[in-house]
Amino acid sequence: MTAPAAVRGRAWVGKTPLFAPVGLELQAGDWTCLLGPSGVGKSTILRLIAGLETGVRFEGQVTRDRPVALMAQDPGLIPWLDVTGNVTLGARLRGTLRASFVPKYPGGRPPGPGKGPGGRGAEPPPDAATRAAGLVEAVGLADRAHHLPANLSGGQRQRVALARTLFEDRPLVLLDEPFSALDARTRAQMQDLAARLLDGRTVLLVTHDPAEAARLGDRILLLRETGLTEWPHPAPRPKAAARPYDAPEVLALQADLMRGMMA
Amino acid sequence: MKTAALLIVTVLSLWQGIIWLAGMPAFLLPPPMAVAEALWINRAEIARHAGFTLAEVVLGFTLGSALGAALAVAMGFSQKLTGVLRPILTFSQTIPVFALAPILTLWLGFGMAPKIAMTVLIVFFPVASAFLDGLMRTPQPALDLAQVMGAGRIRIMRHLRIPAALPGLATGLRLAAVYAPIGAVIGEWVGGARGLGALMIHANGRMKTDLVFAALLVLSVMTVVFARLVAIALRRLLGRYGV
Image (cartoon, each protein chain N blue to C red):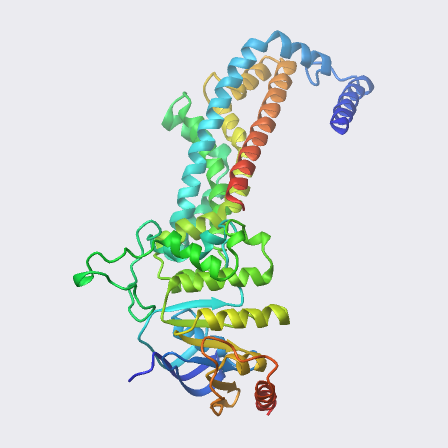
């Protein structure tokens, strides 16, 4: 089976190498944490997979076999749209906001049960508004569905961004330091929420925080100036949850990762 | 309000003071009272001319803004088009509008058309450049998201870039509203018998300086009121958009 997404190659900024040759493969259904200090090209790798402009010279190969959704440190909310409007932004931008939602990508989310022969008589898929309302509720913002981003806290904005990411309903989700700008408590809450709601999807989490990698990574890859190294597989994560932030083995892993980053 | 009244009183006293001290004859600098009198005596004529000027300003402003905004959107779509058009636009602004006015009159006659064309020429540049500036400054995170979401260029323009650029467009429109009457008046100066500009030229030729000042005063008040109305309308519209 081929990897859902892979990056093989090296990159330069002008004449300076950004990272040594790397080979990164995501595994379906796993959270892969790409951990490393700032400026070693973590985000560049993520943007290569997303197909976005990177501003670096990349020599190599990027493959991806499924559509992605993106969530970054800057929630990228649209200031003139309320919470629901931001969650349904993708539908608005694709011109499908008023059309009923049909999952285009099997594997993104299991389609609803079809009743009757040949799926006839099956319940129609929920429309964009219904889905958005459900997701806004899932991230705990039901009472703020009509607030503008300016009236939300940093953590609430990232909740909106998470709901928007879920609304896209893509099998592969790219998270670019999504919780870095949050305070420690909000960050831990967002990690729990993301682990729960993104369960079953393939996730690439770019982070500079060893604690975050220790809580969320099924696999942890350490990116340093010298190259990419795969960390020994941590103990399995509880289903649809982050590892507890205060468990001794998580703290030990965090300390290990920190040593790895300092090395 | 109090400061405004104080300012007006100061200006009027300075004006009258200069006339007394320097012994200026009325045909060079009419005293304030003479201007007020000319304004009152000629109120019907001034109002008629002001009506023409206002019509030219409103039409020219509307047309010029629409053209400028459309041009900005077209340039926002295409870097190539921007590369070609930007120097041409800048070049077009190096031609003094005064120099163009007689030619426009030659081409378009003595009616309203050359005045409106003048106003359009003056209005569309600030609108186009301020709006284009806004269109090129859409926050990158939003554009990245849109790309990953699979949005087309037209929808990105409609749902992200244009709304985000509305404050820029408003800046352009507010500037243009102040400049628009200048275009109309230059047009009226050069040809035709209607409008405040024409009235001023004629009055000046007959040494009726008080009437020139009266017309100028009406023009200024008209411009201030027009610019103010545009600003208020824009604030309402933008407020509804939440930007």
